Every structure is written in C-alpha cells, then in structure tokens.
Image (cartoon, rainbow, N blue to C red; front, side, top):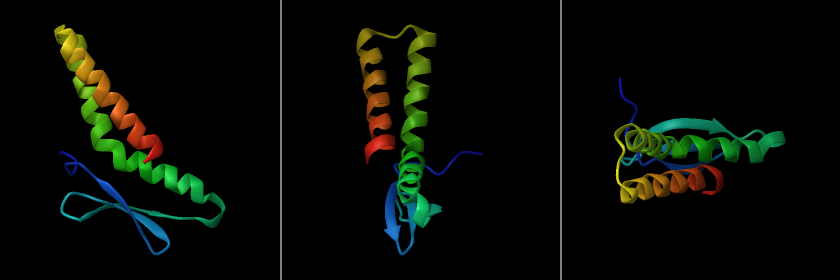
Length: 90
C-alpha cells in the first residue's frame, strides 16, 4: 500500500493543525496542546514534509547504488536540503 501522494500542506483549523493533500483531503490532524504548542507545530511541519523527505531519500539511494552523474548527485542533495528545510522551518 502506498501513502497519499504529496505535496502536503499544513493548515491551522480551530485548536488543531490539519495536513491536507493536493485535493484538500485531510491526511493527518494534530492537536495543539497548550503546554507544547511549539512541539505541535514542529510535528506538523515534519508530517507535512514526509512525502518530500521520502522522495529525497529514494533519490539519494538511487544515486549511491547506481553511480549516477555529479549533476544527479547535486539534484539529489538539493532535493534533500529542500525537504529538510520544509520539515524544520515551514
């Protein structure tokens, strides 16, 4: 079974975050706890970035296993950095 395709986006709805797929279908709902609002935000960022993180890891494994070109290595690294940035900051 495959996961819901990305990209996913995060949305604040009442007192919880929702993660939506490209068709605005809820993929995940994360409650905001008063004592850990920052942690809830970090969790939703990580969940939202999951499809890009998986794709970036798959690219990097392909590059490593199949001895791809330097350009493909750079592309895989850039994908990973973008996904990590999304997980940490967006």
